[in-house]
Image (cartoon, rainbow, N blue to C red; front, top):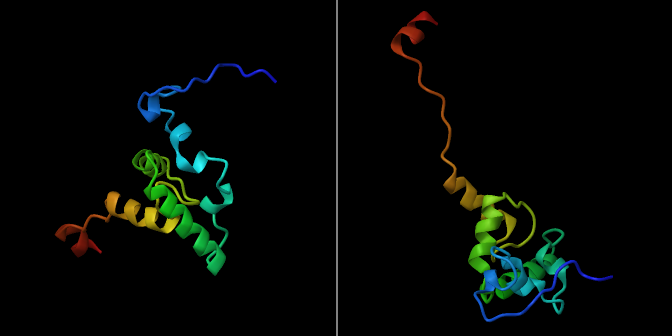
Length: 114
């Protein structure tokens, strides 16, 4: 199969090497030497937690870690390790970023009418 476009390697910034904004091409997790399942642990057993820890260590050394994390938060990615954080860690960030919604308190007239 012939590719639709030619990919060239350059010494440009990682996200502009092929197309602007395509940071995933520079992500360490895209390296075929790593098992992609490592970034998507299936549970909380010891093996899954070890995979998540290993994925997080690799993420910490990744040149596009911040872009990956920002993308996962902006797009509400709810599974796997993204930007060095698990889904539980990203949920905590979402809770801090999202203001809590509270119902307005009833006025005195509304309380007395009840």
